[in-house]
Amino acid sequence: GNLLARATQFSSDLSIVDLDVDAPKASTITPIMERSEELYEALVLGTRDYVRKNKFSDVVIGLSGGIDSSLVAAVAVDALGAEHVHGVSMPSRYSSDGSRTDAQELAEALGIDIRTISIEPVFQSYLEILGPSFEGRSADLTEENLQSRCRGQILMALSNKFGWMVLTTGNKSEMAVGYFTIYGDSVGGYAVIKDLLKLDVFALSRHVNERAGRTIIPESVLTKPPSAELRPDQRDDQSLPPYEVLDPILSLYVEQDRTASEIIDLGHPEDVVRRIARLVDVNEYKRRQCPPGVRVSEKAFGKDRRLPITNGYRG
Image (cartoon, rainbow, N blue to C red; front, side):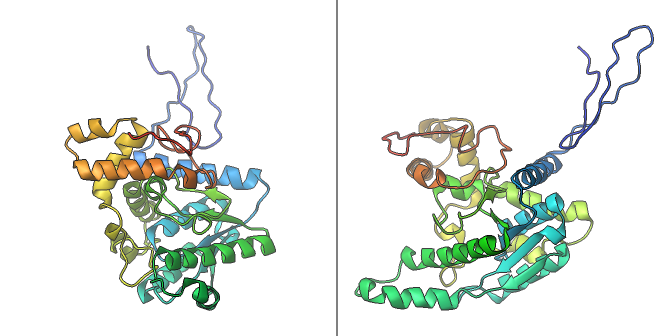
């Protein structure tokens, strides 16, 4: 058959379709959005509805100077207005000057307020308190995760004091393989980009600047290697495959329900596929404790893809 009408996406609309064949009224067929615009508008609408319908007026976001928090901040401003979005820079001894500058420039471009609260005093106190118990053991992920949890506590304290909802900034690639700190950077009320793979985060971040016709997210944020900055010279690709390798495998394994063997048969490296599948499976317990977020893919973690936390499944 023929398409008679299509309402606009992600906004209220009234569409009248008159089937009187003798004197029909003209109907409107709204064009489908380009993929980046469609994804972005879905994030904006989902965030606006969740925040407002849960009776929050303002949100707070930890601004690291990285691409994930930059995109979340941009979405929040379009969803709620700049006056309702609050940024917090929480540098540590491992935060680069560039990241601090990028967070400040982003906040200025978005027109949101930003405050700086160093985690160093809290982090150092933890190290001193735990030092006797850790004696004889070298520094490892424990100290890295402590920093993330310091930041989570600061954000939740601001949330409690001012009644702001914390927006978390983890993406689907990180959540899939457990590359985040439980009770740390996963703490919050809503996970805006939890169903967005990292490559889509990069694409949407460039889209933010294109749709605005000016630089919102600094170019340095778009081009620098992703890093959690929890240890000296840290980069994501030291712990994970490059996202150009990781994301296609995750799409096949998580969203298309392909087995590891099927993905290997498609030409992906066996050692990488087996490792990624294993990481996805063993980190179900971490994802279960993360906030809800916008669903934009065929299969999101949570309602769409559910495995028992304790399981022997190996894809």
